[in-house]
Image (cartoon, rainbow, N blue to C red):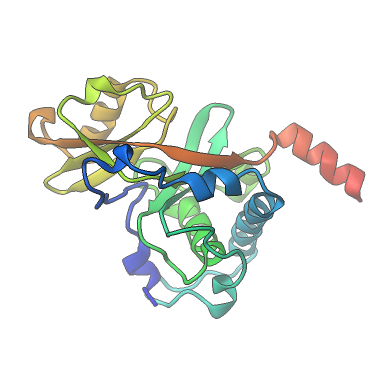
Length: 227
C-alpha cells in the first residue's frame, strides 16, 4: 500500500503512460462513461464528502501513514483503473483539485476517499479549503483517459478537453473547463514552477468522464426533505 506522502502524485497532476494512438482503438473510458450514470456514482460522491467531513471533524492521518483499511472499502473499479480527480468547485470556478493516475487503494472507493482528503489541503495552486467553505462547494469526480501527445497545446478546446503540461520539474493537468484558455493554463504552469518556457514543455490532450453533486442550494433542499 502506498503511503499518503507517496500518493500525493498530482497536486492536480497526472503522469500519462498511454500510447499516442490510444484514441484510435476502443474507448478506454467506456466503463466509466456508463458508471457515472449509475446510483453507485452518486454514492461515491457522498463517500467523498463524508471523507472530507471526517477530516475536518478531527481525524487526520500523518502524511507518512498508510491509508486506513476502512478507507479501502466500497466501490470497485468498474473497468481497468484510470486516472481519477476529485475537484471542489464554486459555480464554474475550481476551488481545489487533486488527482492520481495510479490507484491509491485497491478499490475505486478507497482511492476517491484518499483524494478527497488530499484535495482539501494539497493543491499547490490554491490555498487549503476551510471547513466553512465546504457546504458551499460542489464535488466533481473525473475519470481521465489516456493522453495523446500534442505538438501545439493551442490545438485543444480547453472547455471540452483536458490538457497535461509536462516540464522538467513535473507536470500539471487541467481538466476540461478548469482553464479558461490555453494561455491561462500555461501561465499557471509557469507560476507553480512546472515549466519555465512553453517551448521546453511537452503537452498531452486527454478526455474525461465526470459525475458531479447537485448545486449546493438544491442539495440542501433535498437534504432537508429527507429529514
